[in-house]
Image (cartoon, rainbow, N blue to C red; front, side, top):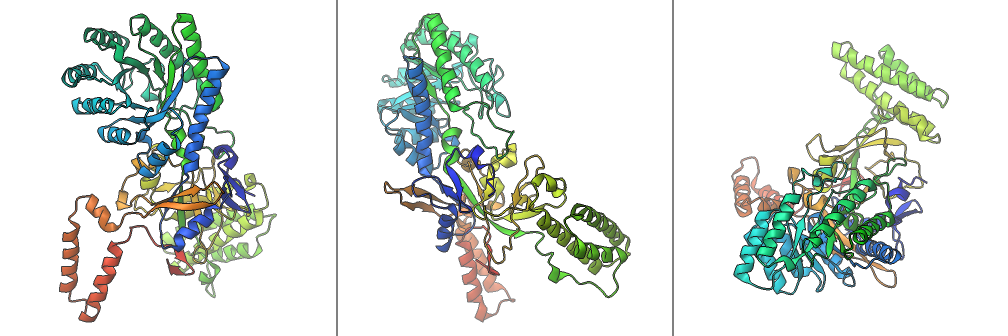
Length: 615
């Protein structure tokens, strides 16, 4: 059985049984069965599957670990959390999140006016709202409206100008005033590509000098009692625990110093996000060097020690982890449309009565290759191909000879891989980069995996079935966009092996896991490919599951309408041009127009090949 590193990244959310990936919950349904059921109903293209039970699992894990550490260290502060909406604002994630966390002190964090409206509408009563990012007077006024609605809302100040605007709005709107938080600019920063979120040169937060001025302004305008929270963030996907420990010491001391200056209602330290998700599929290359238990323990212990030494009360702890909550709940399923070497079939071979000597030798290699000389014969065939392609460029062989060369070399590659498939992968890996297969997927990496394209963020990927059969083809993955960046190349250090399947007669699906954080909201419409058809898989108490919230990908007309095209005008112009065309006779004109309207009402993804037909 091939496990694709599932023990590293899945946190036991998914398992492999009977050669299939299954949801490790209740009746443990196979994902491939869910996908086939949806496709039988006519939905094509990529699918995004959501698993609401995994949202609840992640929320419960964070609260359980922090509450355990609080109990262990006899910590007197409370633990609270908010979900940063920037990570995933889609309703089929947010609404289950809010519903499933009703029994927790778990709210929402907003970084824009639109996100704040979502938070005001859906945050459970008694749960917190925090507002981060740059704010104008209108956004601050929304915060006052939220306070008037009874929300426990904290406006986190990114600069002194925002504090001055709060003072202005407070004079205009009166009470109740939202709680006020100050984002502190630490010297400490994280590591990796998101490290710039923290540190003295970070985009957000107040310096020590600005903190002192903020306290002076709050006291002057009688708002010091509304100052309840300090906030910091050292970066997303914190891979090493050491920067967090350093940041906790710095933030804890700032908390204590501010209280000693008279901020007696300061009672909360918000540690931001950054709790890392383990994406790796390969042993020896983890994305983090700590556990959630260690993370929670270090935060609680650090603040307890500082509060004790400074003789100040232990603050409530807030966390804004979004990636950790959202990533595991979503899975992208992409059908494989084509394997690019499949046209190199023995039936396509057209050997002549008299062939060039090197082609005769290639044919001999193909017919005599065996386990003992497999690697040697493979290297010989690749050398022969280079020589024959040079001869073609010089005009010494013709196009049929070139075709025979390509077919014979690919046949030798397949034969060698088949012969050596029982060997350890290390015996084959040396040749894999030269002989990789290119798998064309019915999806857009720009739309559905933008962090791969933009940040080289890897996601666990594996077939949904055939996992009781050894995959033999080193794989690079191509999406259907007309862009060379739409490729996940084969990496010798983190190789991906897939099955050699004939997609003209059977379906083959790849699953990209842990895609629930950021990918949807960052996804772009390169080539005007849209958000995939999505659905939720929900489980009942008796273990049965159902498909809910099925939302088909946008049609071509919908996409054009979103781009502010006048779709009625487009339809009118197309109809007029068909009617004016002298190339279409009157009998077929109506049929052509009908075909066009059908296409406009479908999504733009391709149709997969099944049993030789487009489906």
